Length: 402
Image 1 (cartoon, rainbow, N blue to C red):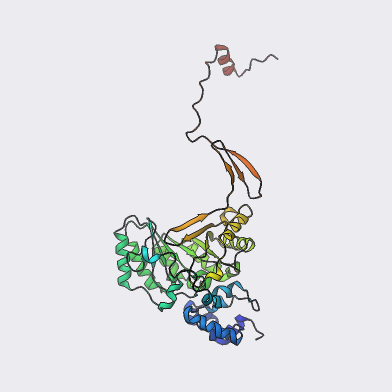
Image 2 (image 1 turned 90 degrees about the horizontal axis):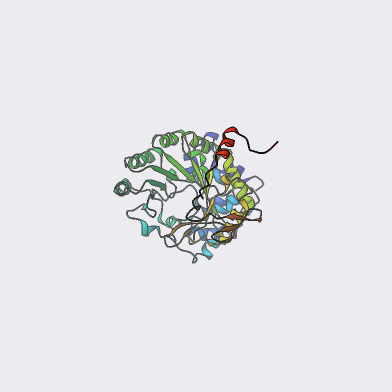
């Protein structure tokens, strides 16, 4: 195999340029078996056998577009590591849980997770264009491909309508953009019929793994049913391509702000340098680095999880060394349904009622005066000015002899 992965994909799939640019063609031609993967990615026969055994429990799905981003000959390519099975998924499968965040416990009706008071998560499908190896809902892979029935969506909307505290709904999955625009329009219209619902968000990785999906009709839907926000999931600067930049640009033109939620992954993006490059590249295409997630304790993902300290080191390495706009909030989503907890490096050396000693990004320490909790004392009344002083103030003289 002397050609590149992209060249082999084109040779095997034989798309026209129009087909390659068509998201539905890309979706239909996903690589979903190890045998199909081995036709374009050099794999030893023993590796194929072992990965096929892993894929029984943890399947694969990769779009041709995303696989074409792999750098040939790099066994540690960040695209490859995120998307193809790994024997450690099976070897370490006893570590972690299927539903570590206990979403089921916070699900009042099928498909709706209501954990935080003012927002809810609506899971409309378990289908994704790419089965990310670190997926939080990896448990859904064994259940086949499903799309939430209209009656289930209606029940979820009824719950939202009956819960005035909910002002923000995140449409998620799977990946909700696997649904066609007609079905998405129906879901958006149903949600917009709820008077107290202010914001709708999409959680999708399509701008990264299949940016062709961001088409004119989808952007019109977002404009019609706005305000809509979109959270996506770039993990590495190699994913930021001209196609991805175009998708973001079209979303922004439709009035859709785009935030990014990176997952910290061992051997993929767990260095300050890669995260800085990623944040700066995101800002260049006008995507806000929103969260840096510590990878969840999901069964079959332990080989990709880093120590929590690594995330703190990265945030510390970003702060002061790139724009504050490019420093995401590092969070852990705690098991047991406790929700997201932000973590920050400790910049406070000591703290008293009178002052703080703090450390800056260079490691230098400074004393910062701490105002009293009840505010400053009332000013002391000045003694009445003498008639001579008042005359001097009016005349602008100081009374000093020449």
